Length: 318
Image (cartoon, rainbow, N blue to C red; front, top):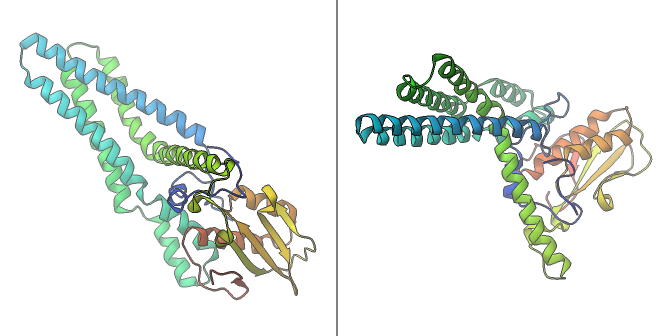
């Protein structure tokens, strides 16, 4: 999933559900622009995740193979049932663990940006403290991933200790422990990005099919006046020209009077769009532009930043 994330961004927009899913993908986490509508390191997370799945398959293979060998040796069918139950449990714990560990990623993404633009120092302290904490879901997610690893290791040694040398068993024991880290640090970001990529692709394909044939496109995927946000902010940058970026200038900054500017955005404001705006804006008072862009991004996610002294919405969303 790479920038640009989809075509016809001046006409097509993902649904609100897809936008919420976007909050769970990996961001750049820079201090001045933590990231909302972006996905970074998708390929790296994908490689790590696929590697972990291959290791998981080895756990499944060794467990089932060991159970069958044991059954052939002593004829006890309960070893096979024990292996199947173990496989179901460690797969289930992996899936639930990944889901739990990633559940609060969306709110963390919101909070990292909200921390920069919220006008209340008290609220900023609360957000700062919350970002340092490990949530219960994150804790139990890692706990379930750890239990899954214990089940894999236990089954490996129980069934195969007489069939393989200790060196090989030790290597796979270490690999199953490493899988905990991979799921918690990579799979938890890659899977939402993978789902988001396919969701947007399917939505765009259907939208484009309707649009190209002159049929009424799906309203939730079509940019219209209700999707346009106009945000007025103050800056001492003294920019005299209109700054434009993206297809058909769907994102632009228009100078107003008395050092005020209007940020006009149609559809999701990608983080890469903010970088392009800053490039044209210049070095003077970039913070005002970045904070205005983040405020608009938060609004597109359904989070309204309390009114600031020099920021206001200038559209039908006020």
